Length: 550
Ligand code: NOJ
Image 1 (tube, rainbow, N blue to C red):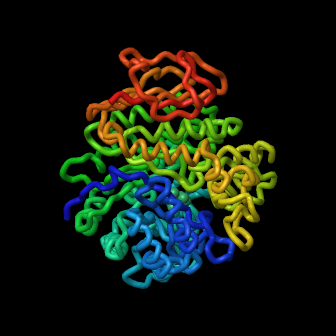
Image 2: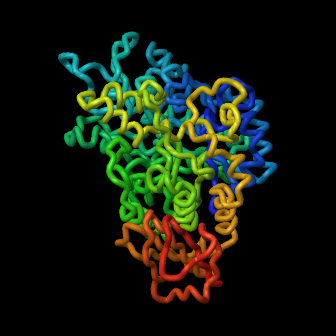
Image 3: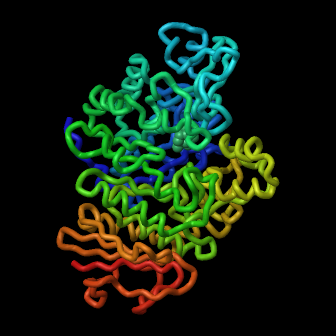
């Protein structure tokens, strides 16, 4: 089947279902809530939805621990509600992609329960190892969420590998039967009519043979021995040839720590391409080192370097995926922008990424400028990784310092319910919300943003519509200026008879600005801006402007 690459002309919206909109009053977001909001999603100019996992799950990792891949969780409305949403989305020309989480399952999955009991054919579905002589762990790898990556199972009398939570055992992808299961899952959803997949930590599925000790520990924690492993390309090819090739679908692979060169192995547009786009993490590392928990001051230079590296690195070869937020990172205005200049900086951030080459993703709440959450009590955090960081890691630090770290780094900041109104429970639910609301919902909410023509929400709509109307954004070249400036981001997109200059200020102080040589602003049309005028020679706090020559 021909792959028409429809994703190149669309903007996606990510839904993290628990916190999007509750439709049945039980306090948890669900598909009835999504159904109610399809017109809102469409109104953003969006042409695709990525659903974080909707499958049955014990919820240890909010759905990324799946106990049944072929169903929809009852709390989200079950298959019936999903089919309705899928139909409603398609009727609005919105594609739907699912989260494919096959590096691991839930420990409650039937496969794992049978594997523990050595019931065939499931015995080797997971990565089991006996204790080392003397009772030691099979190797020295760390879990990314909590402690060591091995858990002893009494029933089987062996350790199993879990790169994430204890309740998320890693599948043994070297077992051909497990790969068959993956292909079955892909076909099941594609046959149902979904349009593709976001593939969770898919670069982790092939572990180095023999599972050797990591000699670089503690720096790499085993990562180099399971990320981009020896059979990754082979397995992705098998998934492609054995399922994906038969459908006009798209795939988006999550690639922690991936660089351009490695990404091209999977996404380069030539025969043998097995993935359409990669979620790279470099653009999420402008205020931290490797993980959000090693926080550093925000560096615009670092952010621009990452953007330019990917824009240039994939030019003419592959397609970028663009994002500023998802459910795994704190809110971007609090990180890269300014809460004081919430709306202005939100607009500057939007302009800075939306006009790059690639397919942009907008995460729920990003479009209204939701910001981080600052609970006073660490017990209020829900996320398994966050709780480990506070309660078990670096406990020698003062509680104040540890709490501050969560404020900077916790994923829960992006997981508070979407703020729809300034009414009870922010209009998210008629019941008791499953999680805390950000206290700023009286000011920051969709209804208020709808009513204000200058809101970030309306800016997103304008920016997306503009982007979709400009061929240069889809296929023009990318040129970055002022690379050494830590205060502004300036780039041009040129092609198809158009030239676009995007100018974004990232400082609270006014700064001087002159257009790059060859860009005569007096001959350009100012097609997007976040102030009502545009005086020459300077940029005001978090000002952004998009100029067009056509
Ligand atoms: C990446 C997902 O985005 C994250 O939310 C999840 O916790 C881990 N993978 C494990 O599935």
